[in-house]
Length: 215
Image (tube, rainbow, N blue to C red; front, side):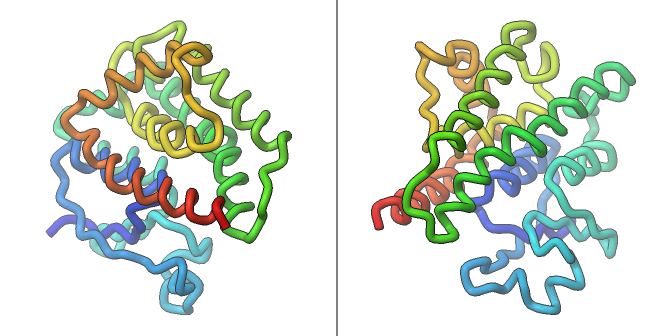
């Protein structure tokens, strides 16, 4: 059995890691963490990850949190083909930029909305929707220059972008008229053999949020 991944399928960040693992042929030991019952706040889990977030990787005692860090580690250690996280310094720097953009802006702005709803908020402020739409527009502009998020081949940057964009499209729809580059890119991503790892968790995420929004 491969490394252990503490996770919940609905998490966009978790799905990025499971897509990555499937792409490089690594079998993960998936260990579900029940966030709704507060399992992530129990002392046992806080010893593993004081941030009390998912995903967390345990690779034979080596503990690593954050999906972006986990993906770069998995590809560097287990990937036979390093194209998902290029070794060329400049290419890798572009991938790193996209990963930081996802963690600090794209994912963060979507998470701000979902966090509000999970916390009992009834209405989404227009400012949060505008912020998310602005992040989508940045991705749209990035994709005007290259076939994929960080160049002309798929990298872990795409794996981060695809789970964030498909998840948060629930709040800002990704229409072809407004986001032609993103929608064309999504079609290419959906054709990848390992994209299936995004589907079930994405459906769960949308179903959970739709249920909350109806209350």
